[in-house]
Image (cartoon, rainbow over all chains, first blue to last red; front, top):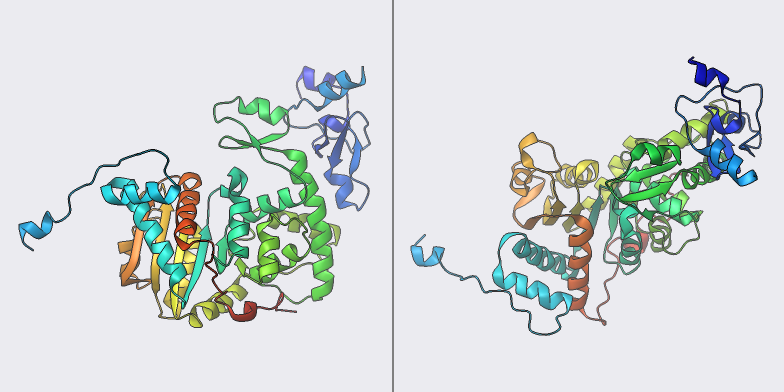
Length: 68
Length: 341
């Protein structure tokens, strides 16, 4: 993992299990969906099963900007 | 053949004299008889014949992204007005129909864009049409619920792709939906490559949550006797093909299996014949297989279906007039319900 990726803060919105849902505030979590849990989570939250997404998207930037 | 027979009919030049209706313009195309304008005019004549032939079952084959591009309501209306009897389609077109039925949208975009920018914004591109990812996610969530329900109702019995389309259509309420229109009109929709679409990948979500027990079972082979029975009960078969691919082959093969052959054919495609692939293959090639009758009324329009197909339909509806009513060819729907339960 390069330095930039390792320094990146962990959020649902940059985890590999996320898809857009209520952009940019909420994302859909496939991992939770497969476990029959509510799959809709906050973009800027996180859990222990975080795994970094292979490609970056704008979820975190846009969710952070909206929160400001 | 003598020379005077070869040079029988001169080209009449297109004349736009004031306001023209769609069919008046098509008649001008027929007068010129040339290139794709001439073929489009022939396609209109053939489709009109199909509809006026009281013993012809009309099949529509759909491949290519015509539903995301805006042809959804037209096809739903045609099903309701009995201008089509049977639809054979890619899974993707019905997935996009369901996306809109569940409140999602397709957006006007552009083909020349930064696709990595779209990726970063969770936006998918279909040439110059954009689809937001969340509309697919809402589709996934709803379809998993539907799959759970259908699986429980069928109790392990398999569905044909026609049963599957019927069950999804039954659960939709949007009157502009193709699946809903077909359910209401009892018109069969076959999706022979249903697995090769979001419908297939949603199965994985549905099955994973159920640990692969008591899941929905769709049996592609079950379609075969069903579509053959449609051809067998039909005195004459007509097909309108948008694109080609699996839907075109499914219709043609059913006509071959019953040894009835196809009597009327319109193919709208931009594919070429040189690869040997079906979508670009000429209708003469289809004759060689016995799928299309040698004396069939047939034409292939080389053009983009989003332009060609609505013009053809508008022209023919104009010719038929407001009083024209066509009875469904499949009596009482032939398949009254999902059928396999």
